[in-house]
Length: 190
Image (tube, rainbow, N blue to C red):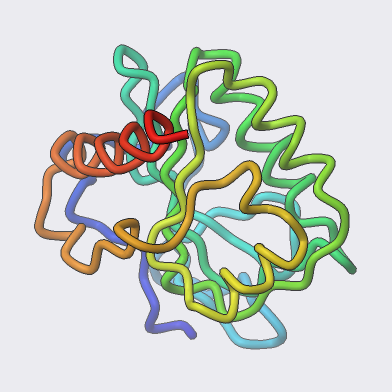
């Protein structure tokens, strides 16, 4: 797992450690020291700790004017044992909500498992974004199946056109526009 790095190419557009409104503002990264681990497997030092022992993330991009953020995840999303959604909501999302972020793109290519519980924090998050949305990009099918089993899909847009394998070839704004169009089309159909 130590070879799985968060996406670096957007650092020229945004760095969460330099953003005063980011929950990771001021964090100093030591790329020579591997100290964080998920189940005794070291992970790249660029991933950010959110309070969970099994789920880390990287805040790849935030645009406060357009009100969107892009978060990339690694690990096991475990709501049953460690309440990972609570850590994500309280330690990251609440900071972004205060700054007006209402559209969340969650990239889950490196989420290897999901263990569900109740959907209270998902519902709370969804209720707080008014006319915004949450979109799950490139999560594995079995993770999406588990999300559906626990009704997370009532609050998070997932599957279908949101499997965007070439997202790394886009600029943050082009990626957002593509996801926004897909989600808006879904909302308009309901």
